[in-house]
Image (cartoon, rainbow, N blue to C red; front, side, top):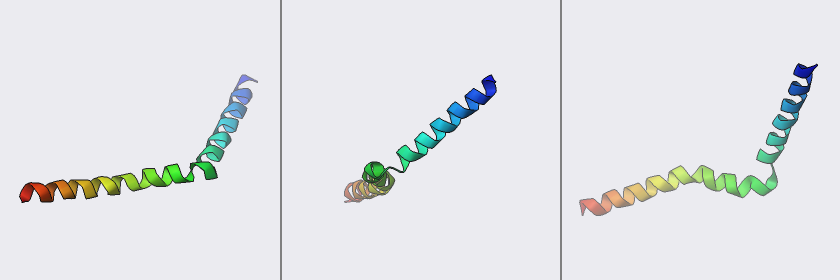
Length: 53
């Protein structure tokens, strides 16, 4: 009985997390986070160029 309730609660939490992650309101925030490592590389390259000169 208890394991069934726990399973149901975990399933609801999983579905809620999926809906939150794929919400259109979050799209711009996640896209910005996805581009962040690329922005860091550009900044590091700029610093490296400046120190060489």
